[in-house]
Each structure stands twice: as structure tokens, then as C-alpha cells.
Image (cartoon, rainbow, N blue to C red; front, side, top):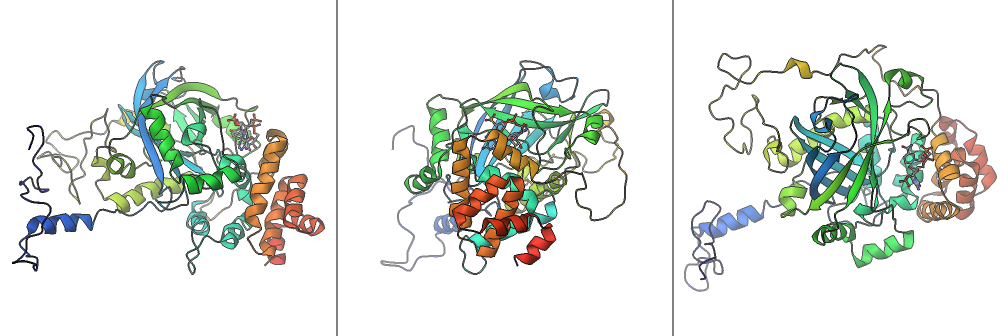
Length: 502
Ligand code: NDP
């Protein structure tokens, strides 16, 4: 044995004498119960897998930094945003949403875009997507929506009826459906896509004034997408292509970067805006709220161990720092609960103590103790209750979010802002897309929707028709549907349409 080589030990540090032959009674055996090295090794192997994330299971991540490039102290007191030139360490994780851990990176799906900022006031997580909007806006619909994008309970196969049935019965999804079925639904790599907070958040300053904010991370590599045929080919040739691309680019020293922009709205403007600023199926038009560049994110270091750093990374939109808070966006409100809850299930009650999740620039001083895997000294012999007379940590009153007004009746209420769910999808189709984008969109939809039952095809196409007549007509023609029938369905209320196509 060369001098540099370390001795192989058990998990408890005792030297291992032999790792090729189990301990047996005579030749050929049986194996002895007292081969404790074998028992420990098999026992650990049997427990290697942790529950897969129910969404965003397949992902890749990298370390880097965020640098402030503009003065935003007027809007937020967050210390990591307090000075031009200030840098904060980050860890980013990109992912597909619906597929399992072994699924292909080139699937048509939104891409998760989660960033953990290790700030001096604690960790701040931004759990966005590569799309500025989402399919639904009430968290009560989330489990149903995800079920329809996964596998059929009977066959365990992806099922076009489930997929389109739910979407066509949920018309607010049409904006996100239009983005998903554009070529942006199959980004060429994780480096070639934007990230969006999608949600609206609150920023508040030292004086207690507050603003509504949306984040945009604009790729400095340029947007590049795979066409439908390229994505199909990629799934077969290299199911891990985006994971590989991110790793290899960073190894080559080609560090991917994103320009960070914000749109800012005052509370007074929010009351008057033509769209509900908290409805995640809508954007704030750039012409109304021009994005302002405030920083830059660079990823420059690969993880050394995938499980420790990427699989165990746990992001939650509930991880705020002073100066940043939630908005009334209902989907965000649901996620404030759900992300933390899923990590408690997936990683256990002390997941925040794992190296990738624990704060790096801030100290943790609190009264939580014990539980499975209480890593570290479990706060030693410090007091474990509050208030106490023995010098335990004290709350800092001046970091509180400013009080805000709420009013109205407690009830199950839909979004009531007087705007429709079709206009912005139509604007994307009419005003933003090129002829080529539109052609790809129609082809991407028809080659997928054709697998659903005819009634569902009709209902979905009517919704596309409501977004834009040409859009609906071209999809109808691509599917061989009667355009007049689609038009008639488009003129009905959602309830009538559901009834007529059920
Ligand atoms: P603009 O007309 O000022 O700009 C169009 C935006 O659309 C750009 O941000 C562009 O992103 C993005 N875009 C281009 N192609 C696609 C595509 N296939 N799928 C999704 N986004 C695409 O935007 P407006 O604010 O006037 O909004 C018009 C429409 O643009 C909206 O209805 C929405 O669908 C879409 N959009 C708006 C965003 C916003 O926050 N306002 C953000 C993203 C999309 P890029 O610059 O990176 O190419």
C-alpha cells in the first residue's frame, strides 16, 4: 500500500480488513451473522435512495455568485442588495418539472430555475421557472394539475387525455400552454434560457414603504431552443444533455451568466393596473413597467458530489430575508407551505443543517432542538426555551415587515379582477412571435393534442381560438376539426363549453 492511500474504514471509523470476501463458516459458507462489515454495507445500500421530489425531480446545479449593479436601497432594505459591487454566494438548481429523476432533459416542460442566495441575513431562495407565468393560480388545483402531467393511474403511461382534459377545463392555463408549446418549452440547454420569479413579491425599505416586484434573469448566452424534432432526437441520443452541458461548460471555464432585472410597481399602481398584478397567469407588460437591471448572476463552480449538493439542495419561497416578503399571489401562498413541507418529508426535520442548505454568511441562533439527524452540536447546553434569563438569542423587532391592510369576507373566492384569461396569450401569438415561431407552435400543439379524444381536442382548440382566432383556426385545421364548431364552442361560456364537450 502506498503511503498516500488512506485506510478503508467502516462508517464508524474502524479499519476494514477485507472487502472482497464475505465471512463464511467453512467453504462454501453459509455467511456468518458476525460479518458486521457486510451487514453495515448492505444496510446502508438498502437505504441509499431518498423520496424523489414529486415535481422537479430531474435537475442539475452549480455554485456561483450574484453581484449588485444598481442602487435599489430606495426599494428594499435587504443587505445583500445594499451596495453596488456587493457579491453574495449562490447555488442554482435547474430542472424539468413533471418527469422522474431518470427522465430526459429534452422533455417539453417548464424548467425550474431555483436560486439560493447565502446572505448575511440568512438564506434567501428564489424558486422560479423559465416562464413568467404558470398554468393555474390557486394552490388548491396544484395536486390535480401535476397528476395530469404525470402517469395514468391504470396504465402508468403518460396520457394525452388527462393532460389536455384538465388544461381545457382550466382556461387560465392558455397563456402558459402557449409558452410551453412554443420552442421555449424545449430549451437547448439550461444556459440558454431565462429565469423568472413568475410570482410578485414585496420589497420594503428602511422607512417601511413597500413596492411590488417581479424578477427576470436574462441569459447572457442568448435564448436558444430545440425544435420538436431536435428534442425528440436528443432524448434518444443523450437524455442528460442539459446536465452534461452545464457541467462541461463550467469545467471549460465558460461560466454561464444572467442579467438580473426587476419590474417595480407601487401599491397605488397595483390597485389600478389593468391586470391583477398577483395573478400568476399574467405578466406585467414591459411597456407599462420597464425592467430595470439590478445585478448579474454567474455560475463558476461545479458540485463535487451530486447527492450532497444537488439532490439534497432544498429551496423554499418561504425563505425570505428582511426587506423581502410575500405578496397575496395565491399560488405563492400555497408554495410558502408546500416547499418546506416537502423537504421535511424528503430530507427530515433537520434538512436546514445539511451543508448545502445551512446559511454560510449568517449564524443560526434559535430554540429548535433535536429530531432525526440533528447534525452539529444541537446548540450545546444553551437555553432551549424563550423567554429565558440565561442569555439566549432575542428577536430583533426592527426587521419586521411593515403592517399592511387586509379587508373583505373570508370565503372561497375566485380572482375577480376584471380582465380576461386569453388576451396575453393572444398578444404573445400576435405581437411577439415570428411567423416561424407560430408555425412551430401550431406543429408542437397538433402533434401532441391529436392523441387526445376528439371532444377534448375541440374544447382545447376553442380556448386557443379565444386567445386568437387565427391561432385556433390553424390548430383546428392541423387536427382536421371543423373550424365552425370550434368557433361556436369559443363563443360559449366555460360551463356551457364543458357541458357541450363532455
Ligand atoms: P414585449 O413585447 O416587450 O417583449 C416580448 C417578450 O416575450 C420578451 O421578454 C421575450 O423574451 C419574450 N418572448 C419572446 N418569444 C417568446 C416565447 N416564444 N415565449 C415566451 N416569451 C417569449 O412583452 P410585453 O411585456 O409587451 O408582453 C407581451 C407578451 O410577451 C406577454 O403576453 C407574454 O406572453 C410575453 N412575455 C412577457 C414578459 C413580461 O414580463 N412582460 C416576459 C416574457 C414573455 P426575450 O427578451 O428573452 O427574448
